[in-house]
Image (cartoon, rainbow, N blue to C red; front, side, top):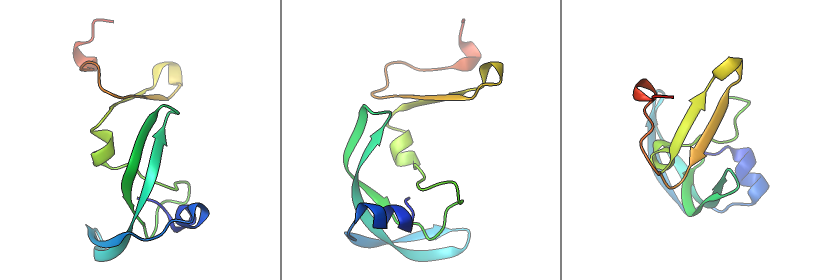
Length: 101
């Protein structure tokens, strides 16, 4: 999902509309096509995104599970320092509970 601010900044045009059901019921929302670039090297061409009515003020976009499930995504908090990393394509299973390191 992306905010109206992102839509306007990128000059996106509506491809179609879709129904989105959430905690406030079902709404008809616009669908756009973008090139999504993550970590400078993970690129998804012609990715469909939905225009959001509202997101928390500090967020311009939210990645959905349709994108997250295509890559390895990890968040660590070692030494009080929060770090996130992504890898595409997936190379191996990451299992912190059974990691010998």
